[in-house]
Image (cartoon, rainbow, N blue to C red; front, top):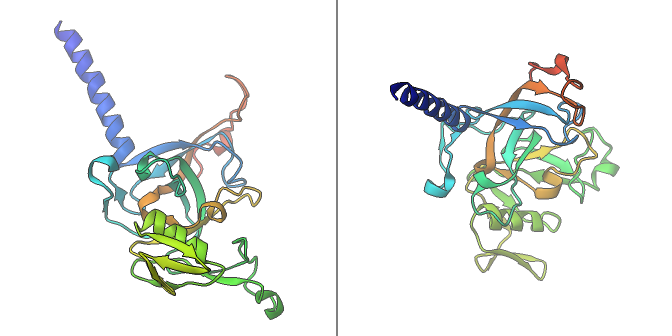
Length: 245
């Protein structure tokens, strides 16, 4: 009888440790598509460091959003985050998990076109640059000018992530019933892109990624296997253990 209790206690302790590690230290994610090729491939499993930008406390449905030791996402990082455009789930930590590369940190600027595609080179001729716009990535406390081309993006960001009543009427952005030409933001944001340009599941689709949705940084591939190859085939041994960069 005592032996049974010891086994049960050991198993319960192991489960508790696993839950604590997953929620407070690091977590594993499967790459389900080709959106991040040639950095990450479908079938890769990666470790995600939850402390890279400060620990986002789990179970947001209980006590809301809190982060210990917060730090902004840095340009070039491969970031794991919750879907910012999910309108059906009120709590960010319950939304689908996405991955992308940060191409602009809070306060940075990007040259983009009307479809929010990034200009491939900052050295483009002035005649070409006139067709592009300067996209400002909001930082906490900053104000961003409202223009005709970014009006909808800012409206959606305010409504989804800032808790404001925002709407566009007669080509004017109204926030809490007041027409505005500047928007002030209360948290940091980043702009993420897919390494595979054919994949549209990035900020071109869902806009800015707020700090509330950031889980952590992808740090290492711990397992890799080609999908649909069966039990004994398809292992990518050379990818296992490499750093995500």
